[in-house]
Image (tube, rainbow, N blue to C red; front, top):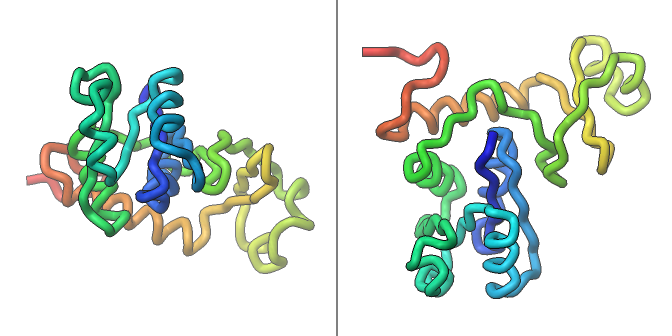
Length: 170
């Protein structure tokens, strides 16, 4: 996946959704606009913001920096806007990055995570992934299923995007 993002602090929850889709997404709680723009330019990242001042900067207006300006407060609607504007596809890449620190997740065997997950999860789940940086362990439980369903619903509601797998086709 070639596209990567940096998300402004005014759209922080969106960063988790983009990571959920498998996109390399940086987020900083405390960074000034100039540093944010400089980082996006230096690393070739799309800058996602609700700040109209950033979108009006010469570097954005000239097209040198790709800025997605979202005006919505709701992270799911923000994500739908980004999906539509950039024609994002995530099938096959979802849940490959840590939601907290953005690092690619690594597969782990059951025995490797035995002491890191609740006993019920250990008894009922067979596949795990772990963040090599923060150590968080993920598995395909009910929370994962709800997030996957939410992504499918957003995909279905985004005009111009092909329906997700299993979606009704007309």
